[in-house]
Image 1 (cartoon, one colour):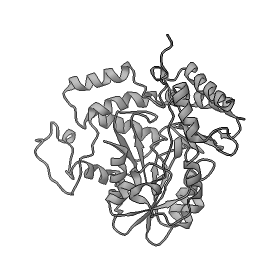
Image 2 (cartoon, one colour):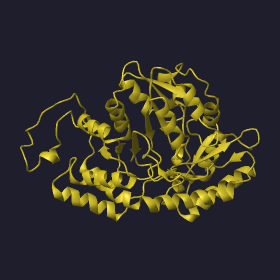
Image 3 (cartoon, one colour):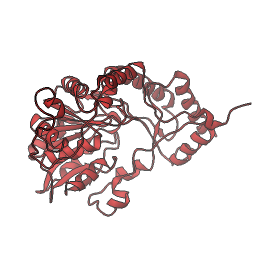
Image 4 (cartoon, helix red, strand yellow):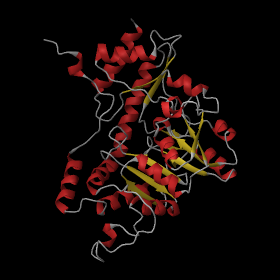
Length: 384
């Protein structure tokens, strides 16, 4: 008996967890120290040193990192922050939380990254910062955006949720902005289950660290063995955003594996590109010169005028007929209920791409057979 398609489902993404992560978590549980402590501190130090940034703070989510970044930068009521609409809602939501206004701008057709000229055209006397998002793990033009921010006296904040091991022109994503944030959600290039990290200039990260532990002047780990854990002062109205040591234990081992994860993702992407290039109406991802992508997403573009099916029809048949899950990245933020009517600049590329983009499975635990299954299914759809 042939099993039903759903029993053979190839997921769009899944985390790559091994015995090393399990052993590290068990070590943490046995240590008796579960909250933000030695493992989180170690994780922060290793990421900081790898990126060559001044400081790093491990937090409960990438959204928490964004919220803290905006608070630490003093972004608030009346401020405008330029950001792409072709992104997840986390950054715009965090901007609303601090009272600022997200100003949505368009993206490049080639990379789906924020468009430099569109960002420059959106700058006003109320603009406080530019948030760049490295779409799918392909870094935006870091040098150009750094210059743009400096020329206008603005902060540059990198939303590097997709791009921890990516680089452009020898510069690591997350190492150029005044601050940068990373995501360790289960579908990202590495995971801690839930979690994120804020990195960047020490004056910002240190303030964010204070705000992220209730505004208390020192962490429990800093007070451990030197003074009573109840001996502290609250010096700012803070929040509770720290990463636990249980979570950080996973991150320590995942970060060691990240180069291998990235290499495997790159192999899968290369196989896809060689096999899918030439299918009418299907455009494979662009990799610009000097870029080493992180390949969080393998994002294809479907031209409904020349492809045999629309993007949504392809996604439907891949799942229903072949048991292959896909995803869409993203629904533009300005089209979501909370933000409808807020876009004041043309977002033509954003709206075109969002209707035609499709993310294929691309993660380290995929076997060669899995990759070939996706390729064969797409070729079959083109031959319908």
